[in-house]
Amino acid sequence: MGFVRVRKFAAEYTRAMSDVSPLDRLIARAESLIERLEQVLPPAPVLPDWSGAIAFRWRRRNGRGELQAVRHPHPIRLDDLENIADQKARIVANTRQFVAGKSANNVLLTGSRGSGKSSLVKAVLNEFADRGLRLIEVDKDDLVDLPEIVDLLEGRQERFILFCDDLSFEAGETAYKALKSVLDGSVAAPPDNVLIYATSNRRHLMPEYFSENLDTTRVDDEIHPGEAVEEKISLSERFGLWISFYPFSQDDYLAVARHWLGQFGVAEGEIDACEREALNWALGRGSRSGRVAWQFARDYAGRNLNNGGAA
Image (cartoon, rainbow, N blue to C red; front, side, top):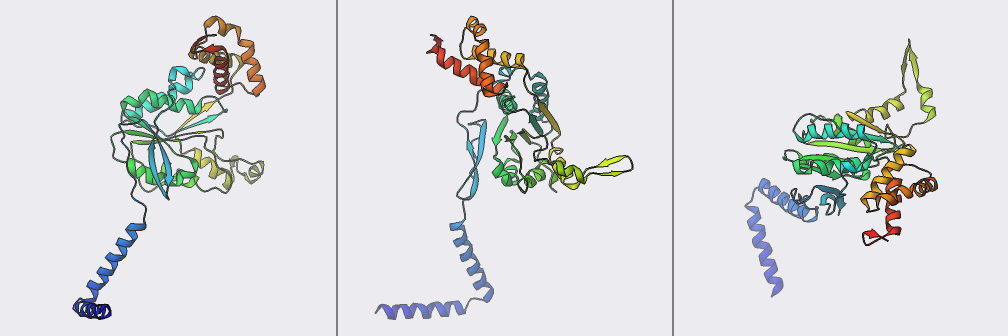
């Protein structure tokens, strides 16, 4: 009985389809195919609540990127950063122009490790967050998603900094091409509510080899670098503002250590007495920097203070 019903249904379906034009059948098949594809494609990214957080991360999940709110952004303030007054003044001025809707530059912060590059970007966010500034951290491996991120942000009233921390590229990597395109290399003009702030220990973001200097040519009295050098310089030159950081002197290091010891609750008299210990800490690390000074202060306070008070 069931077989008879199937044959009857098939016959009726065939007669019905015979009355449909070839174009209608093609459209029906196309719609069916689209419905199937929609079931397997990843969903469109869900935009976060921009008023619920000031910092976000771009993360890939199930083959698609999405913005994730940072629940506890770093609370560092501009006043916490010692001995980089010039660097602070330059990036604050640029960011103030940006949040005011005026023209501003993408920023590349380069120089010594632990000298405050990343901390300065975080402090700038805290300084201007109440004026609509938001920060989105993008890992180097996700730079290929920059055009998609920019499309999500274009037209919004907030001002966005795309933050690429500790950025550098090795020979043969191609992700830097996406960065170049967003900075200044696409047919479409970059939106005026998005800037890129990047930190790196390399001024030109890519390794430089002595052999590349052999390709340098001389035309009359002018020196023309080789193509490899030109390619590397062209990336860093797309940042309109370069801010350089330099190694700390001993006095600079001690000043930063004193500041953080005070922030961790160490008494003034005790701070004066631990100068030698701070220097030995830096000697053991082989570096005098703001990061090392902070690490010393954190360790010292943890060993010598009890429940926020002196031991």
